[in-house]
Image 1 (tube, one colour):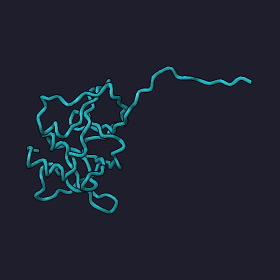
Image 2: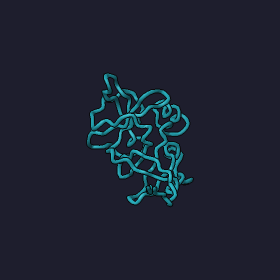
Image 3: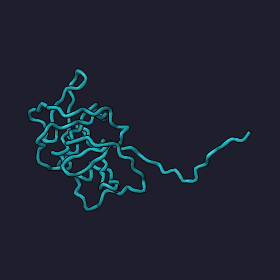
Image 4: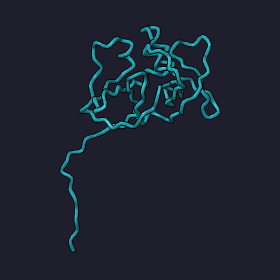
Length: 161
């Protein structure tokens, strides 16, 4: 009796899955393993006297979730529609990232990764990990540790956020 086996001669390329989102005209990515949940478009309640990058509060599983407004961080005009939120876990707890739209899960490889250019201003450089060159354009990976509301508060004293 003969058995058939197949051997793959192609080398395995390690890929990472990033949840891609749109903010303004740019695509950003967050490691899919760092996203707890995606909240559809919802109204945020403003927080009086909060820093400009706090988008507001949204209801989340019987609690309230503090959100970070990426448009405000990147000096973009306000979004005219309701924003979606990526729910992520930070060092100071769960928070949300407000984005214009959640797009798709993008598979990226180390070969397509580029470091942050040295010419980028310190404010943005601190919030980004690097960029992936994809057929549809650049997918810029966000640095979630630095987007935590408490980390942003600490950073705002040393770098204008």
